[in-house]
Image (cartoon, rainbow, N blue to C red):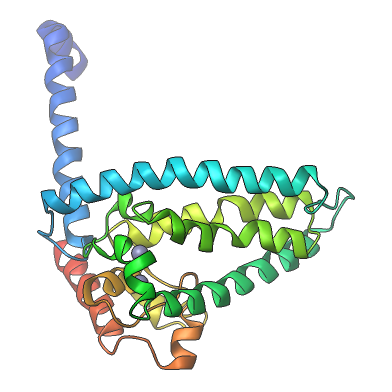
Length: 252
Ligand SMILES: [Zn+2]
Ligand SMILES: [Zn+2]
């Protein structure tokens, strides 16, 4: 009897291509099902909004990199921003990071609420809300004025508090990671997330996705704390999260 290896060999390199084709096909099929089940708002793609997002993403990235990069450089060369170069214990870094995390969370919540006030809204925040079903690009499809408000926090914070170099290395990518995470359009967190008292205070993609879909409620950027405290959590937030998770469970 021929072994499997011999059978494959007798087919020549052609067999490898077929095997590769089958494996890739399987991955794509499983992957599509995996992603589809987790999509918070299925069938929401629109060309007009896509074009808007491309235009504003590029505009925003160019303008804000220039302005915020210039501002940070200016503050550093003039000694407004300095870092603690001394060695630090891990818990000191953790405390410094926590200070930034909760300070920005409060700043973002209230800044966001202000940007929803009619008159101010049209000037700054409307650009970002054109996307009603967020995708990865939505995180940068923002009016540069809004980027100055939110991105300006890090230079402001580091000018006010001298943190360790290591803390800054953690702070710098946080907004980018959180932005990508809350706008990715898919819910990857486990079902128990909103049931556990420790994790429910951190926002999910569904949380911010609903802010885009319904416009009101769920204003927080890192945590749900301010929304719960101020009564601005959407009444359908937890049920909306459950609904996506149920779809996921059915599609396993
Ligand atoms: Zn908003
Ligand atoms: Zn958003």
